[in-house]
Image (cartoon, rainbow, N blue to C red; front, side):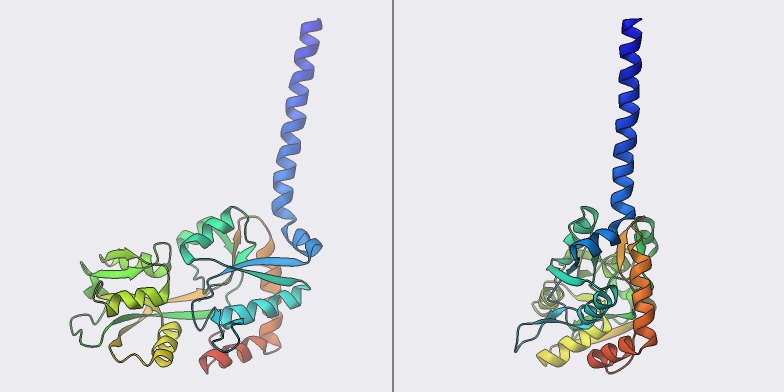
Length: 264
């Protein structure tokens, strides 16, 4: 009887501890926004080297850009501060998974694979893809022309997946400006990236040895905030974005960086 009683107590303890652990785990997900409100800060991953979405003002060195400004406005609506953690693109999702970040603000496109792993806010922008080559390249005119060709892409980016499906040979490079350099140095033939980022780069650097070889309209992506599954943070971000759209803030920020409203 004594042994049976001890065994029963042991089983009950295991059940209770297991339930507590599960409750704690679920709570950490469900109460993410409450945690953010309590500490007063939302931690957001961004590159800081990806104009016009996330970069440093050349004169003041202040972190600016479309995604950065939108996120600051979202945080204000939520009644919290935002702490940006500048992180290389290919490390951002890993940081989100390990809870180093609450979300990401880095022109993150929604795609089916990501939707299996993350919840997303409503979109706050649309991104078209373009192929960049050297100015004297006459062979690459479409996505199909990348088959068997070396391209510089971030391994976890939409563009990396796009070029992989086209049959390109991918040279891993998650920094946009460095990917462009690889094209200029003839180490790769092309890179695919966001139209706004490419046009801003060409305008800023006045590069004459590069060109936009093709615009890929079929691959326009919706830009949104990814969050961990079940965290509920996406609903709060979406509500803030809805209010920013209604009061004209999103359109104002968009026109500041693109001279048009990409939030539509």
